[in-house]
Length: 331
Image 1: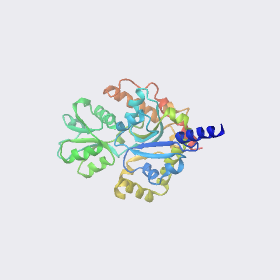
Image 2: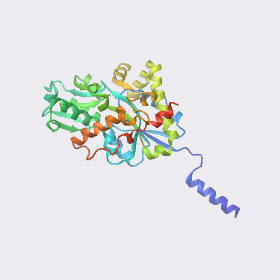
Image 3: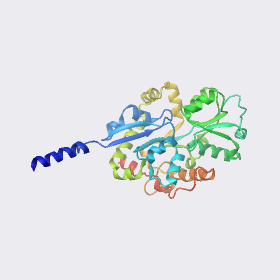
Image 4: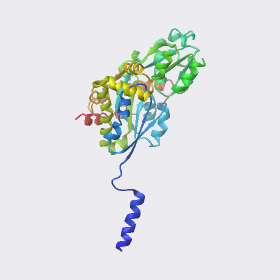
């Protein structure tokens, strides 16, 4: 009997794995140019801080990451724009923003090709502009065109990834692009003229890079979420206290010069873990309903609904913003 019980125990352990095995955590991310995420990544802070088997997975755009999130193959996604997040939560996908990394200022916008004849937003009528459909660029383009009184469908929109935009630019198959760093910076370096930047958007209807998690997974693993935020915040702190070393790390990660990294970083308003609990970022459990992030979700959804990117508004924007983990990380 004892031998049989031991055999069953050994067989069970062989299939189930040891009881002390670390949980697997996959963190998705985008390349949004030089920012503190790269410092946390380069210094392996997620692996050092989180008691888990941590893997990082690159995606070239937010929409490309959404299927992975929907299939539960990602626990976190960072560098994500607000529109693909809004599209998911409007369909009832249980996702929440746990950290607002940064607000775009001069690191994203509309850049036009020399010789395109585009001098103003009105000149975009009938022109070919590259966008990542369903990403932040859809919201930005719709907002800027609305400000100029130009119909959204008056512009010929070509859906392509940021790397594809660089190729299309050199072959002159597009007249303009609405994109973010590093491609935004690269197109400027190739003679492009900036028509608008995200600094022209108000904070409550702005362009942010956010980190999100499955709300159900986060609720079941709160300590891992808090540890994740601490690792991310350590990259922000290092960037602020050791700026030259941080720029060198970012440049190495992105394969660019320190000078270019400095320009790209300057195009962001960076938020720390402590910043998260202020009204200009996530807010607190009591103030989340009026925070800049929540208002941006609502205002982004209104624009996406108007241009047909979503079929309905999210049921509760404030429920999709989760400041409690940042609050715990800063205690």
